[in-house]
Image (cartoon, rainbow over all chains, first blue to last red; front, top):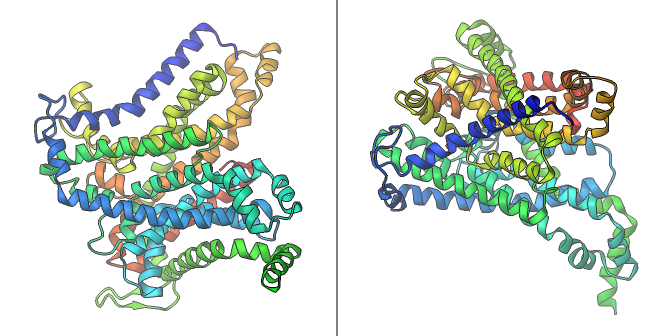
Length: 266
Length: 286
């Protein structure tokens, strides 16, 4: 579109300001992790790597990272399975209520987090009578991770169509062989991308987690949240925050690389 | 021969019966989402109709709207619920104001390469830890924090800080749908408008805006729902202020039926909103 020169400049300034607003808060956390002073102050008076060593040897944080990875892996595995199945059901079949099913898949992230959290909490504790544990967190996370796998896989399924599969079956391959040798290789990258995004989503989640985690189950976000208000933990929080920012950029970067600009959808 | 015949016959049977294949792929997701998840939501709705004895904390499984009446009559709850909706509207407006120029720039002004870089630049923070982003704003607005020491002013902990932080958190959810809406809008439409003599502002108002309303609403569904469901941000930067989410969290161990009623209220708000915007075609943009 042809804008006037001043319009173009104004727009560019607005874009620049938004980008500054997006990145400055993240940079503040990163810079603070090198602040020599234990109490937060801006700007930092002196820089040090001391807190990175302190954080690395913090047992509570290390345990929390392990818990988060365990939950993330379990949730991702379930989400990969269910999300892929749901994609096949919705892309390759027409059936009554398919619109409701696609709504159902989005619902866990479309509904307010406290709703999903409290609903699963009361279902686990009052209806099913299972105590809250690491398993209940994994089940809850899997529920809202399905959508990212589903979005990635169904976009790809629509793109590749059914012709090659039909050709494979016309040539005598069984349905299973066709899936294994024809369909799956074409889905490999989106499964990897969807899995990465699901893991990232799980790794970062806190609202649903607080409602479904048993006593003593501390994922990294929960550990950070409980230590956030303790002034003497501020330097460690800054370091972990910086690590989390860097780690969370990795899946999005990789999934963009894997499936290009069309994939890597939320 | 008979060994290999049976799977083949099974496969052929499966081939002739697409319904059976459908059941095979649909079963597990449907049980997980349709039974476990929807069942939980139904349980939540049921719990919101129960009451808890205020002295013994015993829950009576009788059907009553007492919790909802309590929410409407108790000034504290009424204030917090209305305030949360007001904050959700504010957050949506702030995000819209910030998202429009950048989305427009990416879709219609920037060269493809720059646009791609900008999309990634906007996407990256979406995946950066939500908790860390809220914490970053704590460092910004705290006394003697970044805002105070560089700009000389800070809103301090409270509602203003919460609105700013929530706007920051949900901004990418507004940028992305508007960007893809603008991206789909053919450039020729804008050129046609120009050729007819419209100035940029007129083109925006009469051509661009009507076409991206569904995308804006799609973004607002996220900003709205996420604001209603959040209780972490208000705890981190809100000081002693409450929001709907923090009420639910604080009440869940004290009075589960009341917490369930508050949560159900937020679902009702979202349901009404979704019904209102359904005709605009926004839901297909999600």
